Length: 121
Image (cartoon, rainbow, N blue to C red):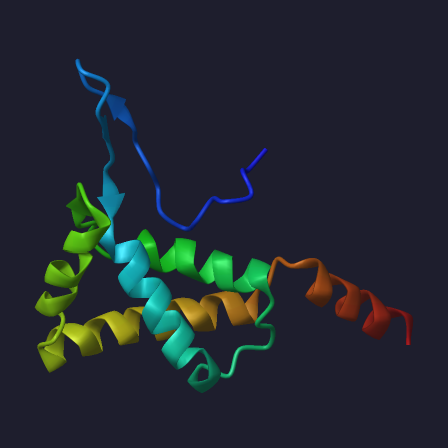
C-alpha cells in the first residue's frame, strides 16, 4: 500500500550510525514531471488521466539517464544543466515520443471503457 504522503520521488533511506536518515533522489523524475505538466496539452494525447500520465512518466524515465542527488535542494543544480536549449529540446522530444506511444495504446480503464462502448455500438 502506498502511503498518503508519497510523492513521485524514489527514496532509498539509509539509517546512519547515529540515527541520521539519508535519501537518494532521481532528479530527472522532478524535471520530467515538470516538463510533462508544462507540455501535456501540446502532445494532443487521447487520454490524459492520471494512469496515462504516470505511464508516460515511467516510459520517458526509462529513456533518459538518471541523475541522483542526496537532497531535494540539489535538484535545481541538475535542472540548470538543461537550461541549454539543445539539452532541453532533447528531453521534450523524448517526452513527445513517449506521449505518442502511450496515446496510441493507452492502458487506462477510461480508454478501455470507451473501446468497449464503440464495440457495442
